[in-house]
Length: 116
Length: 113
Image (cartoon, rainbow over all chains, first blue to last red; front, side, top):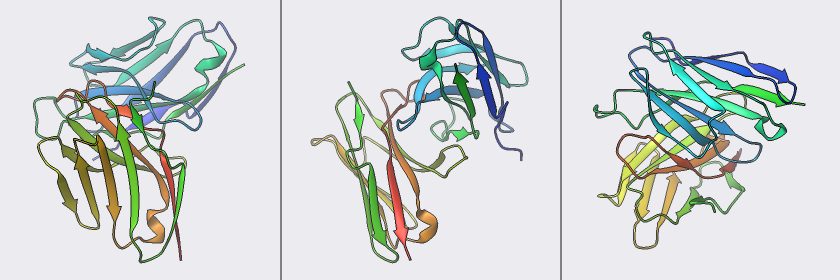
């Protein structure tokens, strides 16, 4: 059973650029959630994808967008990067929302994004 | 406005003693609560959960208590071990499908040998 993986590990971008972060779900999981974790804070929910559709969204602007693929891997895209987007981006996979274990999210190690 | 608060940024406990981590929330619609543990350079790891229909849930050395009237929950670790040293996050959700878990800022636990 493979765990959740994320790539890249670290990334440095310039303000105004665009970035794509990638996540591979744990085997058997069809739901992926993305979080932003600023320094010294807890993870903040960006959005969730279930069966390739957005299934809930936190308080993030539309320049944060995502995709989920048929193999349940996922991408987070951020356009027009701002300095405040510098953070650790975490992806978490979980079982089908209708299952008994829907609440147990398995997190990847994160991608550290620095915007200069 | 923080909906989930962990007012102690850090906590130090002697090995073998009890660790108590606290969490307060403001949204009375939250009905599912979780605790996660995070080691450096790793993602958070699920520890234990509790739904609003219960006031206690136990799993080995870890017990979570929920006081709905006070909007307060706590995680007890007994006995504490050096390997428990990590950042602990409390998270809460309004719905049943984890579409929007709200995390607290975390408490760094240090268990001293």
